Image 1 (cartoon, one colour):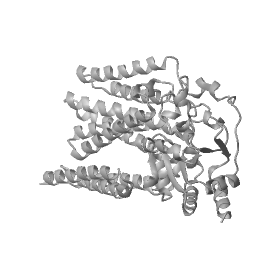
Image 2 (tube, rainbow, N blue to C red):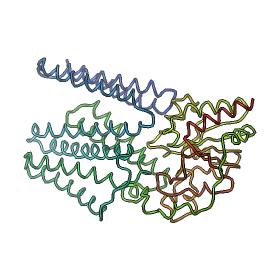
Image 3 (cartoon, helix red, strand yellow):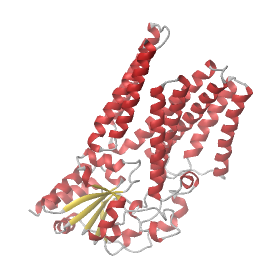
Image 4 (cartoon, rainbow, N blue to C red):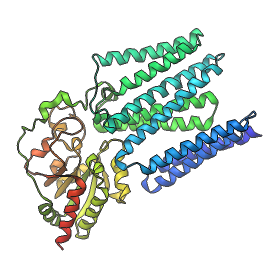
Length: 462
């Protein structure tokens, strides 16, 4: 009887995951979709605990609910307190915890399945992939957090990483087929997988972090799916497959948005600043500066303005000010919209989430392929904290590390104003030739500060 009930619960949980994921595709339903999927997960967890076959003593129940309670409190407080600018780091950290769970499942269950080569293969696959996801996600977190600011490239790192990857496959196959099931080999494989995860992410430059986050997310989903196979747990299998497939598709979308094969992201040099210092020496010409007062007048007499948000907007916590600026301009009859590049920020959808926090209408967020034809009919483009995603070198300079990456073609607008703290190079480590063009003016300063001044100047024009 319990078995029938738990299958129904798992079916319910699987359906909520699928429906929740579908609802996440629309900002208007995303919140409810998240709640629905979370409710399905809660039901599945409780069903697993209370309908588990065999006796479970009170001590075990106490440990289980104690761990759940501790994790809930830590996760809740962390998510509530995290700043929007730190959301990419949090995503990487939470994803790494998922990989760590998959790895721990493998370490615990290995000794319980020594008589089944099939189960051993499943366990080792989940452990290796989970370990790579865990250590890789921690390195990604350190890069996004600024603890590891530069890409670290060991000599012949491509060959080294490839040899370790082949070694992981060979070592796993040896353990499965030789019947050599001892702790030395198990923990040796675990250590090698952790090492590979570190070496896998360390050389990848900051500009590729959105792709890396998506890829590691798919790894965690795949590791969870292997856990579902091991336990015959349908809801765990469904959740893992959904996360794995969604992460893989998102990775491919990110690569397409950057016009770079996944192979080049993993083994290329994109985002490595030292290799391209000559491009950022500031010798491309002079820049024109504009102040909030003059910009306010220019905006006041514009018919159409497009705003391009970037990571600098998130760092300055300026999303609410830019919403106020949008409202002021619209009250004056100015058409305002936002141009969103797929890899703007530090993770996929970062700018969308940031602007949604300030209640920007989702219909005003225009994707790159839709908004690019509009720049030529735009009076003014305000770029706030974005750099590489508006750099014309992606189209004109074959020697540039971002050459071939689709960009927001802001240079086609009548006027361009770029807000940055300084003339420092962007995340890809190169200077932006857009800053030196005749139609471009630079608005220097912290985004929140200068936009607040801009709003005040606009109000003074009434």
